[in-house]
Length: 70
Image (cartoon, rainbow, N blue to C red; front, side, top):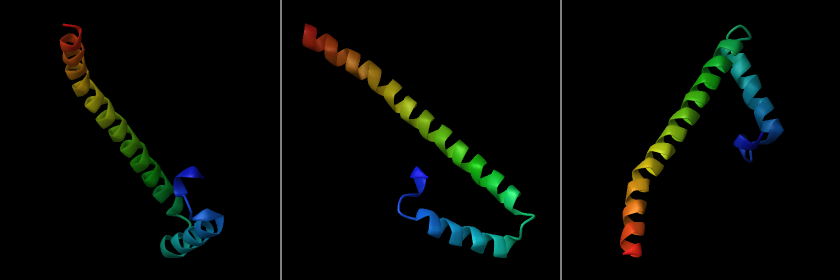
């Protein structure tokens, strides 16, 4: 569970029990699905932002290389 850092298994169990008490067992799959979709969308957006940033840098790097060669 690399993304959770220092929470650990006991912390996750406590969080799961609290969520179960608050929302009840019928809502857990719905909440899990929503969290999964949110994380997936966040990763996709992050990847797109990184790719856009790299695409903006490429023309500038080409110009730098041209001036160095001249």
